[in-house]
Length: 361
Image 1: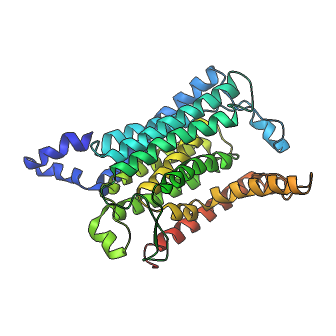
Image 2 (image 1 turned 30 degrees about the horizontal axis):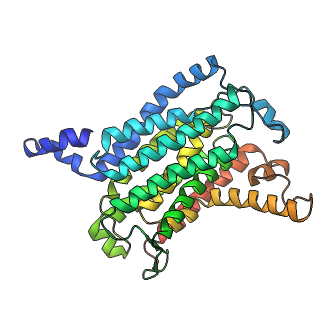
């Protein structure tokens, strides 16, 4: 909004020329979202406490999780609101990719809201039926991927690039739509599975969005993308502003979600965080890189799949003490802060490896 209102004035006042630069607007999107998040989250906590929208354990978590009961949940509303306001302020609102991401954030956020509503108001700790949640995510993901496919002018919307290999690009044709849906739905659920300890999901998410600030910028820049020999997607650079807004909103939320948490994000936060991250990866044509920078989410998801598969194959035996894998380490005696910080360190290292793919080709 500020870009659309103020940049045209640069013709008369040179000071407004700074709004032309994505780097400038991304930096202030981070700051704006952070300030908004720090301001509204305490208010949100009071409202959630008043409405008694608090954490309910399902009964099979580690014993020490019972002390978390009563902690307000649905704090993801603060993340979404902060990121949305900041994005609308600093992004070029003529860019269709911004609106696709906002749609995904709103759609999956609505699914998460109903899931949290059932858990808190209806007192059903299982929440929304998994089938309903899944098909809701599929519908949102389908609309987003189809929109991206038909809006794209580069001719690369159906193509899949592989990191470390500059000439290895596969054209998946219309099959890419199914692949894109898998990315959005899979990432959405992966972040949701990771959200089991204080601050465990939000920091790797912040790191991932921070990494994609760079990927979005270089992908949308014709000269830099040509130099790095990566796919150039016209308009993708503007996605950096959204990623910056998510970084700021996430850091503001972490202020209150850090151990011991005074607020949980709930599914209204985790589902759209993952879904929008997947959407950003699709727009920037770095889908496989997402599996690297989001390695913690991949690990958590695979641990659940292995646990379920092993349990069925062995008729009752377990591969891990509990899944997702962060619960396994809890039952091994690791303290919660130790698990959280170590997973953060892994996320940071994976982000560096992901960034190295820009040059190692």
